[in-house]
Image (cartoon, rainbow, N blue to C red):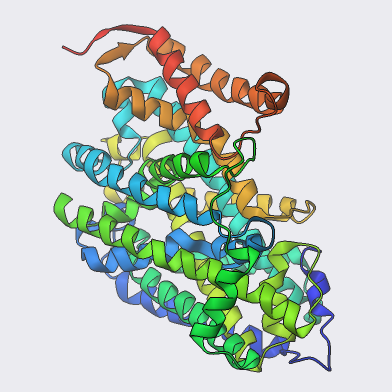
Length: 500
């Protein structure tokens, strides 16, 4: 089982954190979320679930979106990636910022002008039903896999540290986790999540800073001394200049920019929170301040990663075979008890933050985009609410199935897997949005589906044979751009005239 080796804690080196204590933390935190869910779900309807009645304060959304953007993957995988990749991820973060500016200036005005519930309804107004269904379907596929990856990462740790000791099987732990999220988001959806995200961001950041403090205290270093050690080490290397390297800095930057545009600006999960703001101006302020905040926060996560590896070298900690394991290993085995408690709180907060919004976004997209729930004039409001609840339950079952399936798959760096999948599934979405916003052409609607299927297939072949075709060059996250470009070219080839 993933992370199972972490249960073999060393009695002479640190705390064996009791499974009962971890379970108590989990249940207390869950109770807090249920309390928020209860307070925010009064008089809730489908409009509350989908867009929070468009009454969310922008600063609340901005703060909560920090936690949603980071997720459990960032919490564990990014510090672990420093061992092999140094601070090269920071170049992607710089790209994120410029991508967010594009979202602020280009995409948000479109969404608010059209007054959309699902952002993919733009495709129907711009191109037609096939483009609309294709874009929404790729989102549903990508977000389902991505959300299941993130949930699996956290459930596996809960399993190893808590539920294995009680003899509870992994599938039952997964059911418990999914059921808790389902219950507190069931009635008010995004209206609840806007508020629970503030809790999750707070606990995640508190865990980050407290862990750094405990490591400095253990090493008897002040912040200045630790900073000097990090900057003097190979871990702080940020810019990779080898153009053939998968993490060549220029393609990292460009990829980061487009990853943020696609995985935030063209993603129903992230945009659904923005659409709860009262107006366009508030939504733009929310996005700007969130994007500014993510630069130093991601740097601190990388700084923590370097600190963990330096700590391991100084104390004699064996480096785990999987990079994602180093943070929990040191937190539980080699630091004071508070570190283990802090790690679990931060991890649980990160897990809830990404899982609840993903379930809500998937429910919204399937209800609005696939079932056309908002257009069902023959259904009463109560019938629409019932349909949405059934979809929400169905989404939970689907995620549960995929999470259990992942338990049989062993993955090294989850964040790299997520970006690889995103390159294939978000590429057609990028191509559709780009063609719609940058050109005035209409297209032959019946030919859209072949185009959005062919583009990822060709991208896969180019990636697989890249070293033979491009003089040793290896694709990284920029595969997303290739996929989007192929979709754009395909749409250009099936154009049929200009918008009047």
